[in-house]
Image (cartoon, rainbow, N blue to C red; front, side, top):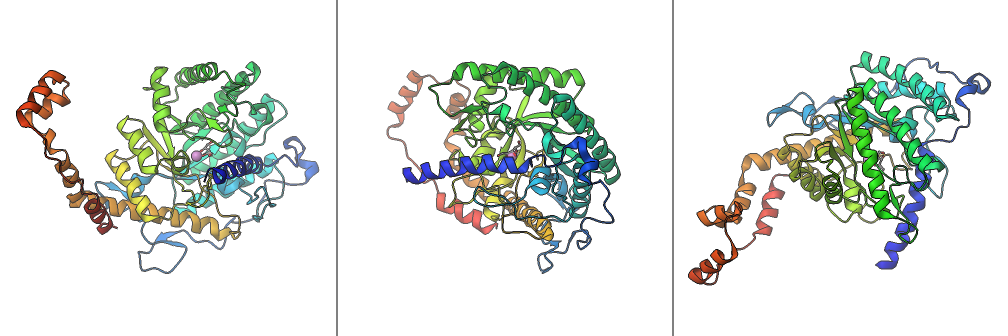
Length: 479
Ligand code: XUL
Ligand code: CO
């Protein structure tokens, strides 16, 4: 088992590093050299001419390009379905994923791609993005700065590229009535970030990361983004022998404080979200899981300024279920957003698959309902097609099945909550505390001497069954 884990770790480390190198395609055609490369933003007609607007057709429909369970306008448990979810498409997977893996070349040749990472290609992709989300019927999208615009030779050039694409995105999203769920800065792909960004041992890199986040936050604000995400893929270490962990964590806290100050300075009211992940690409990532991140926020007095973006595949990598991570975030008042995806039980890395497990979706939705929804957060599909899925329609089918699975989860969770047997089982389990002495304990008013006296009075306590199998039976009956 140990050996297998070690091998898997090695495999997924090289896998993810490669993966991101692919997501941010190397510049085969410099942004400043569009004419010579001969490409242009021009694109005749629709990007997805074969795909109609996706509609709800109900569970008996056999049409793969329809929703069977997700009915956006349907009211359920006090809210429209679309408002429970606030679904979002992740630009990086859908428009920058090529299907390459550490052992193989790209497999996806979308018709609108011209093989370049030019500025005009970036604009064309942005047009494809808005046609895609409009046909899919999703209201939001998410991006990294470097997914949507090519990196330049200098910060100024990168910022100018970003401004040009963002201006177009703003025009297109206004027309399409779409919104940004969250934006973020890509602080893990460029070689300058090899030791980390906010936790790099190099001061110049810390400063560069600050400048990049400043700009990414400003464009997110300009686009009306409702949240801003920090995922610290390289904020961690490969070896403690050469790492001053205390100093790095202090630097990360200073970085977050500066981000909060800049947010306030520019009048950005979106929620700042930390996205935990235990490792990959680093061996140890500082935002290991929800509890570690909550502790970090408390230690540095940042708990009022941040919430968490829980990604299900990251949860399982940290040895927890997604439900555990969601509940940990929720009971700490930190549940802000979900990166909706799943891993594979037989594979040990971040496979970023679309969720298709109804039980899992039901558990997720139980947490979301208990949280009263996620707004201003939502469900971002941080998920990608399998390498072998190469048809344009697969992009739609993958999102449809992800949306339908979560919609089934919502329906089952509502059934469970409205039926009430499960919450009654839980209530009964703790009913010994619904007493005068229980209230004293819960209010911190029962000291050890007092309790010792009670034990002498009562003798051996009666201990009831946990009823786990009954709980599982009730849960199953709602699916
Ligand atoms: C990486 C991951 C990222 C973040 C944004 O595992 O999930 O895509 O969501 O940087
Ligand atoms: Co994510």
